[in-house]
Length: 137
Ligand code: SF4
Ligand code: SF4
Image 1 (cartoon, protein in one colour):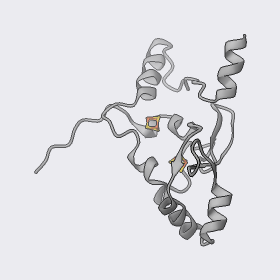
Image 2 (cartoon, helix red, strand yellow):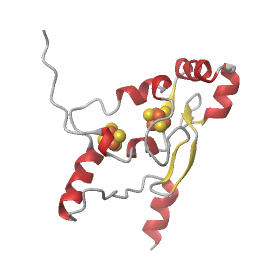
Image 3 (tube, helix red, strand yellow):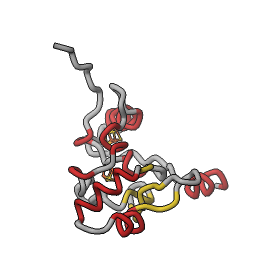
Image 4 (cartoon, helix red, strand yellow):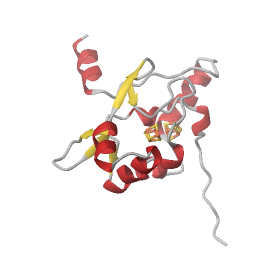
């Protein structure tokens, strides 16, 4: 029997920073799964849930406004910080972060320790527009 590697992050103790990445690419198979979940046509799901991505054919998940990080995946519950389509989430969400560590979680835990605040939500800007406004200040 294979041994599983230790994991050094706990998604249930995190405000789901990775769900705020501007680029969350989805495949046609992911769109089909979401369409089935909502019982709608694939073409409707593609238009409603995704938008043009970074490359010619890429589709990425649409976002909505998020007070914590500026913007977040449209499927993130902004109160609970949990995914509202967990059973039908795209493959990339299932695989992430695919390493024993999560960079954001390490940063979050470090800030919570230094600031002696177990509930601290460490801000991290990941939107190109945020980065531009920060660099102009
Ligand atoms: S993978 Fe990392 S950033 Fe994403 S929810 Fe888990 S701990 Fe948070
Ligand atoms: S589909 Fe769910 S897991 Fe994937 S980015 Fe959106 S909220 Fe996060």
